[in-house]
Length: 407
Image (cartoon, rainbow, N blue to C red; front, side, top):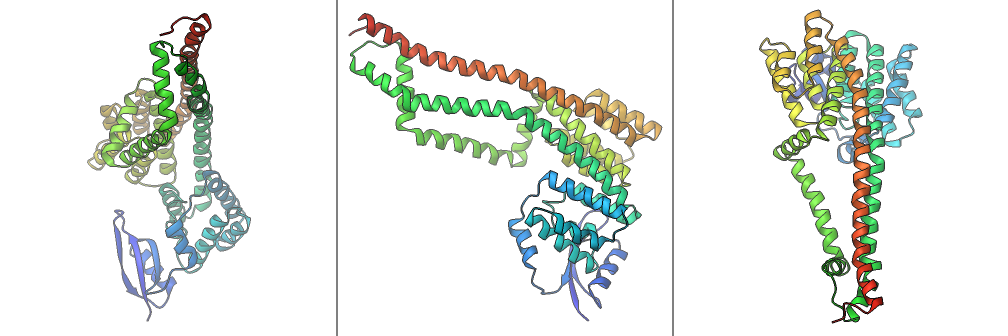
């Protein structure tokens, strides 16, 4: 009897690995599922991984949110039309334009045909299918409502895509202006100003302090430009490395959350994501504790995530959701009050969806207001820098033309 190597998660989410004897792959998968395990990997012992699986582990590329959305919508339409699961995946493999994503879907189909569950096959590609996606598919398979779950996922992904598009669209113009401004200043300091400043040096003039400062800055750019670029790159990488550490991420998230201008935007975005994710998961039939665990990862800010984590712990002790969130004061009062009403009336998912609709719009308005505030600040800084350069050049020029300021 062949031996199979497996990796599973139990009902508490704890990862387990081991070996088992079974007549075939399908029987091994069935036995593990009957024991209540969530299969993440199952294969004959000692079998080499396929090229697709090796590629997915080593080079696992990121599939765009839009591609995942299209895949889910097409998948749901096919399931609704009565097409069987293997045929759906085969058709999706042929229709997907991204070759890497197509190879992943092909591998998922092979695993499903080998007896693995759909969510178990998808769980092997966590950089493509987020946790919320996998658990919702699992709930759909268990309840026999995969079609309904897929269309709920489509709605969730569409709203997430629209929210990200609003954020990226609003920030594109300010970022481009900053990049152009830095390029203009670098070009002036490196290529244009040295010619003028050299003329002042040879004219034996007594230069004003502003011009001397500009000359020193220009010399720094001309002679040590590589050090400037190295310092900038090192600063960016250093901040990124620090942010990737738990303590660094928390401190930076706390700083951003407390900023008067940026903080409200982060709070509204987090409120929209938290309520929408939690509502979607609860509607799919997942337990409140598991739903909160996944919603915790969706908020995008450690400070808010810690408040959700504490609420999840309190729920296991018999406390409601609204009270611990109110105590942490990281969400707007409307969010916690609506959650309290939802808990009292038994309409929590409905209330969460209403709050999500409101704060998605509010987040969009807040981002627009932020960009309208940032744009004039950028232009003011750029104008001030240009005015400083012009003054530093023109004052000695006027003095030189009138014969003044000679030593």
